[in-house]
Image 1 (cartoon, one colour):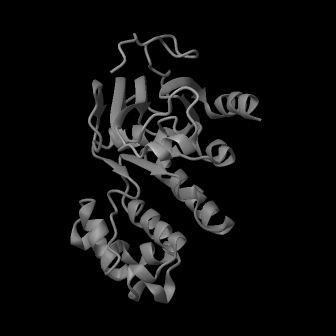
Image 2 (cartoon, rainbow, N blue to C red):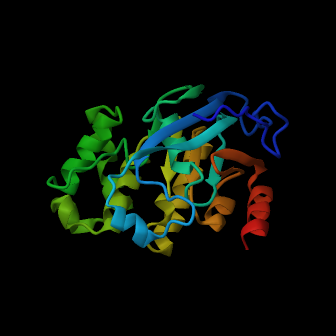
Length: 267
């Protein structure tokens, strides 16, 4: 594992703590978080071509990927925070670490309440109907059966499944399944809701409704974390943004400022 020290991010004074947002209560504290995992794949040597590597027919060897490198920040009650960065910057790894799905090598994550990660907590089963998945998904998030019954019609209406709710999940398109996951995950007001690219799903009408639903959750004092490649969605939905670059926090601040800096570098 690399032994380099953890330099403070360029736009962070060194504490990793963002000024107080809409609320003063910290909901998530990420403190000098490092996450490393292993993947299979032979590394190319200097001057090695793809054809030469194939001819060697060597077995893939595990190599380490240092996905997060000393990430620190604080999320407060009522904030809506967008996480931006190029592919491989560590965005999804960060969400999975906050949700407790990936162990850290160094550093710690503290949460006030149980984070809900869209697409993980609402794990759907292909052989079951949409109706059964709604019930099981809501129960898996800790909702009592009485509340599941009360929210059922709203989940069906929001997902736009219509008559398909009585059909097995395996008959759904990718977009239908993702809309259902979003509807299930947002059926309950969660103190910490994390969403990975969900708003990229569906037509413009569904995206607008999803943005409205996130604003409602934020108004109800939930903390929302959104990972998205759509910079416009982050600007419209989030009041704060965190820019990850090669596993480090490059910039953390008001969403318009972070998005402008990100665009300047990538346009």
